[in-house]
Length: 121
Image (tube, rainbow, N blue to C red; front, side):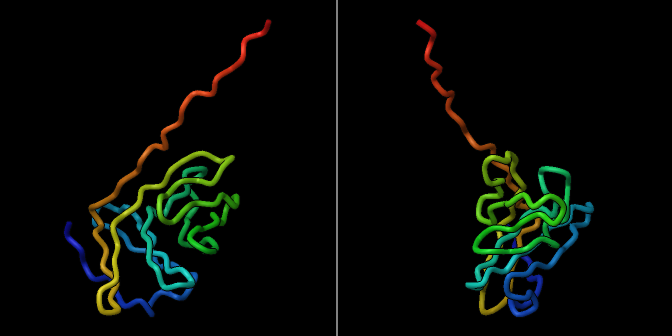
């Protein structure tokens, strides 16, 4: 992993976000929670592509500003009943500096097991 410093923690407002753009144009949102935990997600809601960096951060989630989909900051998954996942990136704090690995993007599919359907008698 190649972490790069992107600023100090206090550069991101509590319950806020800052947006960064990779050389290839991918936009990454770095979020700060009320407990000073940082998370990084692609700045694009899985629903209609809304800018998550402009959403409302609460707990460890962000609400998309377009249609209020709630996305988990830790895993990038939309809260049920909505479905979708956002690419997430490795981010960490060291000595008050926020470090991001802009090439570490991961979008995991949530695994589901089939629901058993009872047959009619």
